[in-house]
Length: 485
View 1 (cartoon, rainbow, N blue to C red):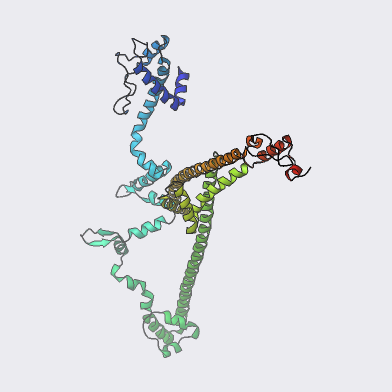
View 2 (cartoon, one colour):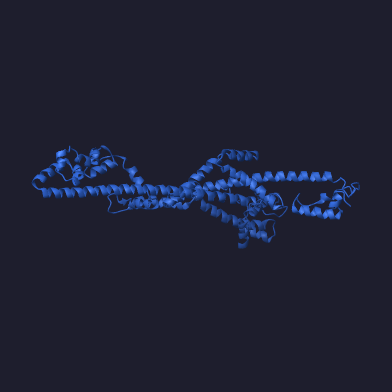
């Protein structure tokens, strides 16, 4: 019985046919007249198959024990139903176990990869990581650390987006996150411009030529960078304590040079970062071009593989040419020049193909593949898999369409080849009553043309070899064909 169950379960198409045949047989035969399988209540099984949610399709079929008994009695179709019922019960049980997953169907179609869903759930859950030291009882630090590790640069953007978020303070005043942050440092948010220009404010005041004349030339820039009050103190020290004044100038100069070094270093780092970003963009562009080129080759090879099932001739050269024509038409749909795309569209339209929405699908595919390559180069482990999953879904839809359209074009080409073959056969039939030359151009070699019996495709190598053999059989030589002896 176990083997029978496996046989039925492994061939669903056969099982469906068996159910249909068995249902018809039950209706056509009764337990009284034919000894067929009958329901336990003696009524015939209904041929109407209702939806599983409303009625069990096998509700009127005897139980397994009753069917086994009927098998022993050699009741028609009892053996098939005895194999079908346990297989059906197993399949029904499995289907029932999948019903709780029905609400997830939309997610599966949208996201595609369950690993992405699991990763997103784990990430969001980490926002509220329990933390006994926190006043809220949780910490979002694990979330921030993970998102920065998986998607570098995202943390910076989160910080930028958080700062201007409006909030209400404890006293009911409207503020922003960044304003309250500045207040927590003991600073006045309304004086940001003053803080930003602090060095300029300190260095304000008029420097006279007399003041500079008292300062050694090598310290002039240092003196100009000092605040007005510091300059006044320095002038007094030069008069009263010149050594202290000299030390003050040296210290001020060291501070100025250190600040200038930091500024130059910052400029150099910014320039290096800019050059690195430019190189990164060039690398990404090159990688994207290589990636999309590889995917196009994959689509081409996949469609070509499917076309191999369509044979237009026994001549492999003819087949290769026909395949190349079809692949060329489909390839022109992606040609950057509009004129070639229009040619491909017109050819497909002539064959009855509607490509509405195809270019939108291709744009989505190319964008998602480009995103995937960029995120992959960035090391973004969060967004790269999502972009790849979206691109894979679009690629599958594109491949489905291209294979279907290739089949339509192949069918059209096959019909054209069949019409050409029919025309050739008609031409041969017309020539069958003609005279065959024997040297003097008068003798008729029969009412039928023996060359019409050539079984090979027209003009194929086999066709020409067969004709040469026939030339020998009918005694036709080149000399006779051209009037020689």
